[in-house]
Length: 141
Image 1 (cartoon, one colour):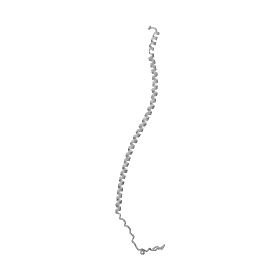
Image 2 (cartoon, rainbow, N blue to C red):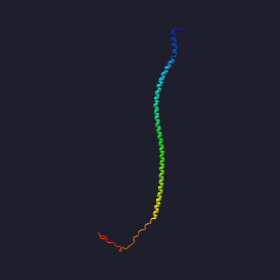
Image 3 (cartoon, rainbow, N blue to C red):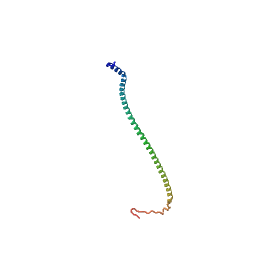
Image 4 (cartoon, helix red, strand yellow):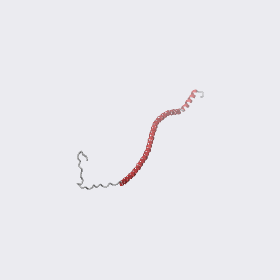
């Protein structure tokens, strides 16, 4: 039995056949790994596009939020400047009212200090007493 090479070959073949299901499974796994790798590469490419879009959208939103924050700060500064302007004009108005009242008082004081003109009364003269000089044209007296 040990000397027959055909016998050894048949035993070897029989033992190899026992491993055929495992070999078939390994071959299936290798094929599946290639398919899985291709699928992962395709999905990763799709995810990369979406990731890029999301990053751009995030950047735009961040810029928009920053812009809104700057606008809010500028608006706050503008409100402060408006308040300062209103205070300035209020102070100017108060000063002008004070100066106006001082000027009206001064005008009243000046009016009281000026002598009041006396009414002019024309003297009553007889009509015969007043003689108007007669002038001739071209001659002057």
